[in-house]
Image 1 (cartoon, rainbow, N blue to C red):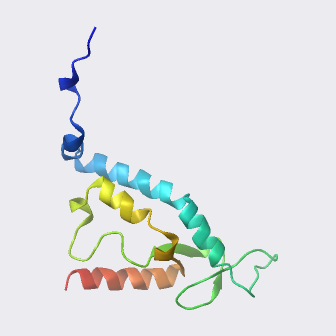
Image 2 (cartoon, helix red, strand yellow; image 1 turned 135 degrees about the vertical axis):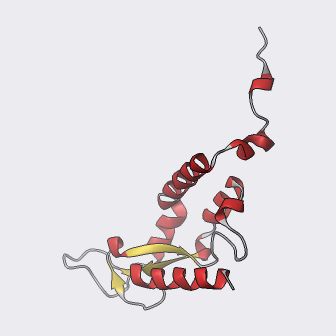
Image 3 (cartoon, rainbow, N blue to C red; image 1 turned 90 degrees about the vertical axis):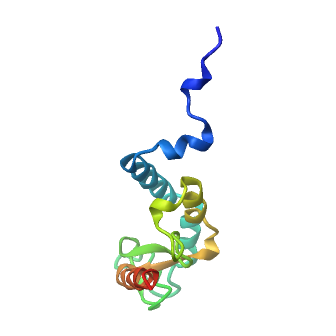
Length: 130
């Protein structure tokens, strides 16, 4: 018995059929996967502070901007070149394009402490509107 393939969406039309909530759920899952990726692990490994140790002798990570030492809970991975390029909105990007830009090479990633990351993100948002 042959399956009726017409009931399945064609791959090129799949994303066009997604409602906003579903697309955002998929993007959230992609971001969660990125946080566990080898690129993130390598970036963290490269940014272990050479001299500063944690209170119990644990690892501290050096912020690429202010160069201070922070625990892993106090740092975030930042894309040097933004995932969503200037002049574009996340909603206008395909899931493939978004994932490709998110899962970039480790050379496009840096560790920033939460405050430095907040400032950089605000500056990027301001520049997108100009």
